[in-house]
Length: 131
Image (cartoon, rainbow, N blue to C red; front, side, top):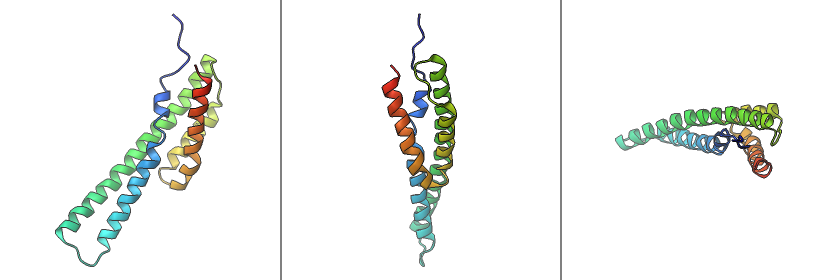
């Protein structure tokens, strides 16, 4: 039985839009937390909303880091597996560096303006070249 040319690592790469979106959710939670805590009056409802905004910030940040780490590892392993199988030979080090930039973009959100379109181009090109 012949080995299929496609790899299962692609499913991790397909998660690339999640880290920037989760980083935006975390930034929105932080903005809400700051807006609620800097207001002059602070009721019980404001305290509950502030706690919710804080939890949204923490959960969004950590989930963005987790998914970006999955994307970085999956992108490198996917490029490596494709090069070994000979179906398409992307530069695995460039793809790995792109994954690291995507991981850094969870903390420096403007970097996602670079990494997200480049990962989209990788996925598009991968779809064209791999049967």
